[in-house]
Length: 220
Image 1: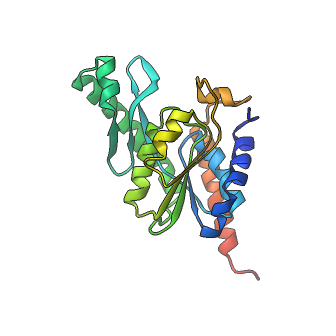
Image 2: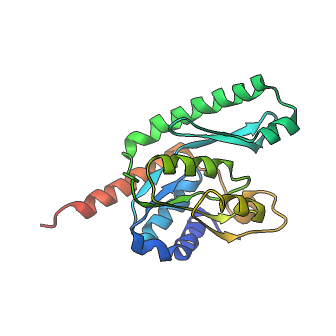
């Protein structure tokens, strides 16, 4: 188990060191992926950015994903899950509308704090604090490819083996530190796993941008 997201991010940064020479961009998924991604960015001396995505949770079972939304009108729906749950098209549409509203809110809140890093032709490492079904990371990968990334790496401290197999079909590489079996929830991989707040995400983005600006400032 990891102590917390900081501990997990440092361990993940070590596992990703082989990508440092490719001058990658590290993208965290708000909210919980940002503290992990910040540690990875430090380890790789890479810029930190965000990619805003929202899970589409089953009504009444929000933790179980039936798909995800991403910036740039990316939409992924697992219609097999929808059919198994007996949901109507109207029910799915209501979930999509609600989550799109939240996605737009988060993008409006966070994006002014961190102007988008140009991903064209870059190696991009997409980081979350844990992956369950893989829907949100898959949406994030679609966003990143649309923005011109040359290579996309999905990276996380903990995920189930079957999800890792699915991600290998959409990412160029997948890096996962722990694949517990049986897998119940991401939080079981951590001793301390509080919900990350908007304010914490904002503070990290402001801090990282200030650090980058200082590094670019000519010395006296």
